[in-house]
Length: 332
Image 1 (cartoon, rainbow, N blue to C red):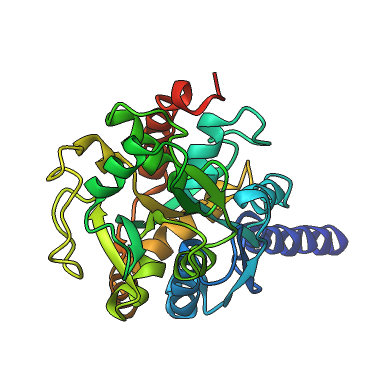
Image 2 (image 1 turned 45 degrees about the vertical axis):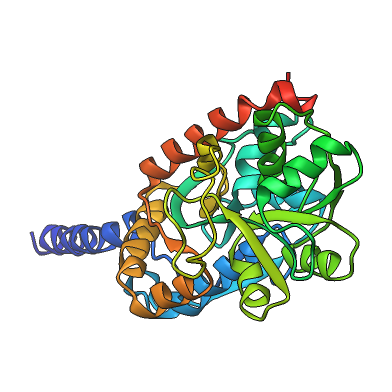
């Protein structure tokens, strides 16, 4: 009897131990280490600025348990190489992606050679949107965006514009404008660079006539008097550029759809609990005064969305850029 009692006691200990261990097995502790965020563009550009703003705020977000966010720039192939690396990354939540409109809406919509689809990733959240602006060197003879359209009409192929890729929104904006004005999509020469700072250098060096891209990396040069802004893509004028007209004011309202944005994506099949952790972190981020001030200071708009809302937003952007396919010569 005594032996039987000891056996029952031992089984009781095992049962109690298992009930205590089970929650530890069921609950993932995340994050437990620093998280990498891959930026598929060069340093100083729109994607890089957005990633570093997020990185500076990350350690203070309770949902991330004080873990740092390490920014890694992998600038190659117009954002495609760094983005494709995330498709094949481990889905443990420790390698994420800073997605941009060009690499994750325009390229998949227009170029069939893009090595992934718009929805090949796990959608975590939209971070911010960026008004698009067209700029020229401060001493340029072009005083308005309509001056550029007129010059392109008079001398097709003479003007050139600097872009941050072969097929991103910095290309879609002028192409859309040309088509809307009754011109051919290639009415001006496209000169692709790796980042927005490089397009600024191209403008200042006289190697390109104009550029249309997100406002953030150009704002300093505009404020400093080195570049002149001609038009913005927002429905209303931008507070930092009160004298610059909107596309709607120029009779090109459809160009409001062309704007920059940054979002946080993960590898496909990212576990739902990790996505929920980040969704909670981004809700905190949205109330972080320091992050909001930094984003606004760079000329962007804080625009946090949930994972489901981000997916719908990305799909809407993809569908819009698909409409440009007949004018871009690819993506039929």
